[in-house]
Image 1 (tube, protein in one colour):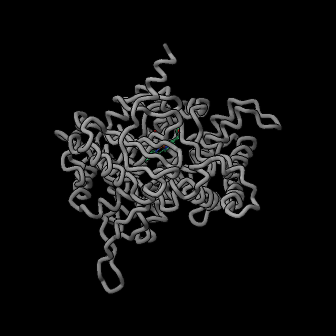
Image 2 (cartoon, helix red, strand yellow):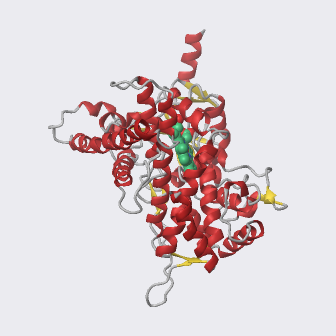
Image 3 (cartoon, protein in one colour):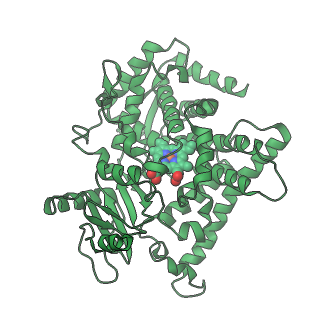
Length: 504
Ligand code: HEM
């Protein structure tokens, strides 16, 4: 009976998709830029031709790719059938050749031990332990903006994100400028993002190429991977060794590594448990998609949107002023009373989703709505399309934080963009509670202390931001200029005071 069922499933048609060439299939159709837009347009096209489907099929030189355009399909496959759809597409260039197999995000669903460690550290009950790290990094950001006016805001945000990740992962401090740990992470993540770019390295599509000897013509990717592997190794070892030293010498500051290592019996050779702690810390350090060469994308996008919508920024200031006592900066205790700030973050994450395409892998043959999903297919949820769906969000292309508000509170009846921004099923982002809190304190503190406008050049002309985004694994805005001017002398004093508070 099982065999008959299997045969029957294998006889089912594949989902519709663009016409395939012999052998290479859709290799030349795969979009390098703005893939989410192209996939969405294809899905709509096929939806008009084959009214009964919301999924697409592509074939890239023998690798089957399924794209899910609507949340219902993602829910059915990634959530309800998560035992099949929790794998990750294999990227031999990244994991095997460059040594990124320590990273939770690239592991097959054997990442269970990593997920357990992550859940223990970052569940809603545990994250208050990391609030001092977020406050310290945010106050550092305010001081930098005070000093440089925010004209080049992107490096400032990068520092904020880097400082926070390193502090959470290892309890280490970083230098205000040219910090070696941040530079290490940048080198590592820059090569990673290039290597993982769909279509960039053929070995990710045709894994057997990984066995090519290095000296062979066309094996330049192997020499490149060997070079990039050194970045990954340094990134993994240098801060971890420093955190371990601190733990031995002084007990170390509360951090993921310290919490993990305290429970272990440390020996000369690294145990499997310790390798897991080091791997997860390395994953956090790489910023779990956050620390990109173009800064922490959600905060950068938020500033860009607020600059274009001064009325939203003003309204946020009115809310903050109505709650905060004079002479006080926002603290986590104010989060409940400042829902509009959270609405701004939710709307930013909806409109400028930073992981627009979320790839999982089908670990068994399956069927969906009468179509066959072959084993080992890369199944991509188009989160961008789900967050732009006008049956869920009216006027979806406009920036309107008010859509999440009702009677001065967050409106729980509106679908939270978190249904797609954090991914799906068993692979859902384990850092989502921490990320949301950290973004909240970042935005609330900026709004409370600064006015934000577009930058002007030396002739007084407004510098319009390009609004261009880099499109890789992460959609991050390209660097832009703006102007942060302190709201008052009292704001300046409060910001300066944070320095001495943090030093205590
Ligand atoms: C605005 C900030 C963030 C966004 C939008 C975001 C989004 C995502 C998304 C879409 C995924 C893939 C989920 C899937 O495959 O279904 C993911 C995975 C992951 N995220 Fe985040 N994330 C953010 C911040 C963080 C932070 C702060 C941490 C760490 C504390 C973190 C840790 C991770 C890890 C470890 C994974 C891999 C999980 C796995 O593969 O099992 N993320 N994140």
